[in-house]
Image 1 (spheres, rainbow, N blue to C red):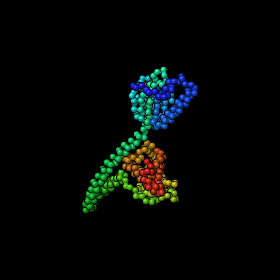
Image 2 (tube, rainbow, N blue to C red):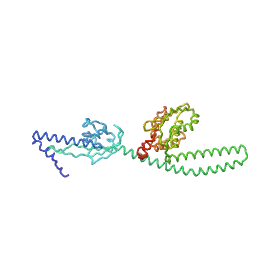
Image 3 (cartoon, one colour):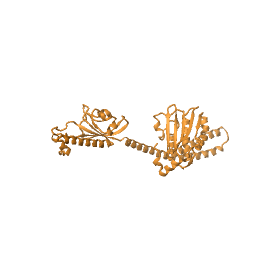
Image 4 (tube, rainbow, N blue to C red):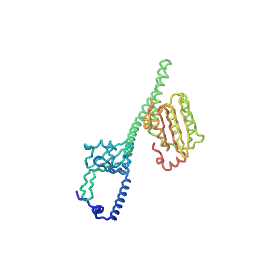
Length: 406
């Protein structure tokens, strides 16, 4: 190992005994300035930097490291890294006394839960520090530098990309299967029509009635399957919205008129409180109506007989809000993050596509959807639509620039 070159400061420190009081004061000021400079530099760095002794005692920590590990600067010199990050201690081969043997370098990814859930990349490297004071001899205490990098966002981004690719592959495969199912269903429909014509030539009687009922059941099931496939393909292959001036009150009225009898048959009360004037938004009437249908039907399925579905509208300077709430069974907190995932459903016979369609339409309209729910108490869905003038600005700048990530 080549000898270390002496710096001007080393040369000065080597002649401390020869310095008078004035020069000594100048030296102290210089050392203080250099210390402040180095501290400023290290505290500006985003990565956490620690210096630890052999037993893991933290001898130095910059601001980023203290924040990542949740301790104060006054604890430096007493806090032990292995106690602050026990997850790291478990992954290292520590000495029998809990100390860290000198290694050329250690690299780990560690998940910590305090003071916040993070994923840290930890790099540990030994420090070779010589004592510059003459006659002091070589430094004998083994120390290590620890570099901490917060890679939580990178990990989450990678997870989301993998999840998105996985979902997309499933959607592509399912869309292909759904498309292929359309051909045999068309063939079945044609043969059912032929069978119905043949049946009409039969003499009236119990046998003909039995065959007619069977054909009717088959035709109804084919229609139902065709509807499921059509709904599925609309979900995975969305149509671009046809934007036009839209009065949300009129769309709500049409939706409630269409679903009114169905809701009444379920024994549900509809409590509607709409603003007398609601600002115009830009939207696709059919797609926004689909949003209202899906959310109101979810409220219907979640609310027992005698329950209430409440609908409210409001607005501010930029947005129009539509709230649809119920006093039904509510959503389990563990299920809340899964609501917009394709194929996730808690309803018997549900296809798990309704809320995915809602989210996709709201995003295409530059809007947002929020859900508040308590198990056993009910759910409130809040739809936020940008007013016309804001929507025009968004379209001019590119919708994706302002469309929120839901």
